[in-house]
Image 1 (cartoon, rainbow, N blue to C red):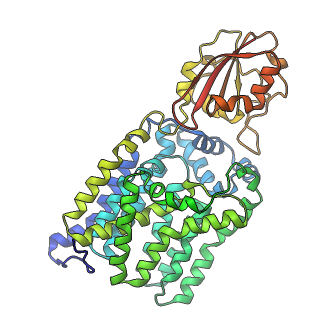
Image 2 (image 1 turned 180 degrees about the vertical axis):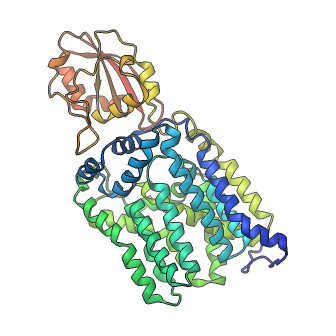
Image 3 (image 1 turned 135 degrees about the vertical axis):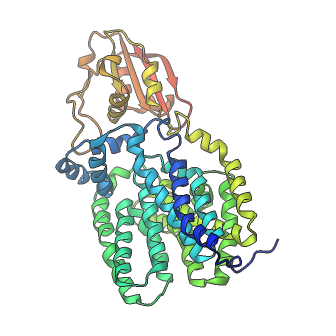
Length: 469
């Protein structure tokens, strides 16, 4: 099978012109629809509930929170503060991410057309739309989809940069990427491989656009204690890049191999852009691991979702370079291989913390009490259950969350449980995680013993346990 180094034969017919005009919008709508599908079925997980907790605070309260934890999410939290004022359903909270995915797919389709051909653009946008990772973050109330869309916009703007206003758009795209997620800036070194006219102005725009990321980075560095849970990683994590970017252990490596072929095709046509898109894909994990070893451990797979568009772009170029028939074949194969992942993501437990399941397991008497292994779980239980449906939250000290975090103030001892023969305890993680939690250890010292427990099936999952005196 021969891979062509040039775009497919040009067709200047009216039908071809219409296809160029409508390809990107159609891909954008399709990607939005895929991201939106199943949006309201999977229950909110802890990260999304943190978004909800932040969005419900006033702007001064958000600033107080940002000075202690999640400072780099401040722009997203401020946006969600306004968005959540119109509703807090699962679909509504996740809708902005689905819109961002549609924008990213449309821009990616147009960028692929500009770099290679219309079929390449269609393939790139369509492959991006059907990646399981895109379905996950497109139905996720966090800022990762925003960051990915801003990164695609920054590369797209570089390709069409011809005027002064384009430099303004470029600076805005860079700023949006850093505001979407701090580590989206790890894609910016790839921009330096492109040297169009007006290089000095472009570098100036890049510097101006980087200001928000620098400010958020300084704010986040002072809060690195909040990510002390992240373990130190080694170079072996790079082997997970194809799976991480695609969201599937089988389709990911195959698409990555296709992306390598796409980089070769693009190199023969435009060396600078081949190098830039390749660095967009592989440089962020290298730099993130370097930051982990030089400053503090920060290597988490979801911080690298911004590489998924580059994977789809290069794979789409390779598919289109083979023949026009290769595009639907590659697309169908990707969907077939990743279908189990798509089904799992759209399951009620698709975010691995099924709080309605935990609520349904609790069958209490009026004299029972409910204890939380992690106090932040209250946000989810309050979201999915009425207070009357749950045992008394006897250890809660104040109903509002901690202004400097997502937990809730609690009474330090178990005196409020005196006279209660049954206590329900819920915690994040498996059964084995319970004894290591301070509240569970307190219950054991007070003479309570676990008499029953239930665990959700996926990691980290939730455990519901019944303790009796």
